[in-house]
Image (cartoon, rainbow, N blue to C red; front, side):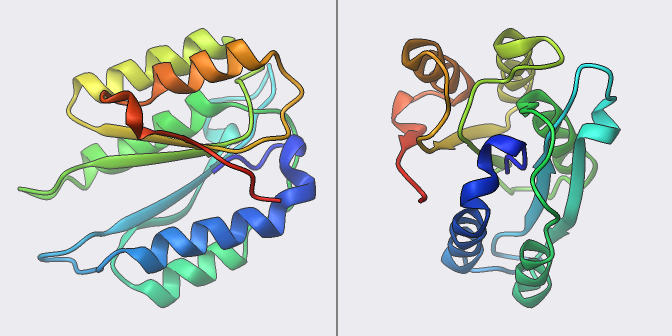
Length: 171
């Protein structure tokens, strides 16, 4: 989930969106979903480790996941979607469950503006998809960017079919 300064005014709404994702899945470490939560922000001189934080490793404990969401820190810095995608990729590859469909839901309001820009985010997403990880993008309004670039980036990050791209307001 995007935790950059551009989402500061919808921080609580993003919390609600994240909570709805956690509540939508049947969680189980053996036969159901496990969910991990990564928040991202970034700057040009930041490392990936400084730009993306694991709020919760893959877990089927709904209460722990919801508490992690509620404890998110304030929004700061700029958008680094590739940072969040890289940390999510590592989490999924390290904790791969046999037979599980690895999935990343990227929640953001804008185009990556640091650490390689949109091309870097698309490149990292392509690597995830090539390794069998499905990527769904959930984007929401408010970004002060060119709509064509924004839409193209989020479509390019999402897995095929293009219907995995969703856009809606959270505020």
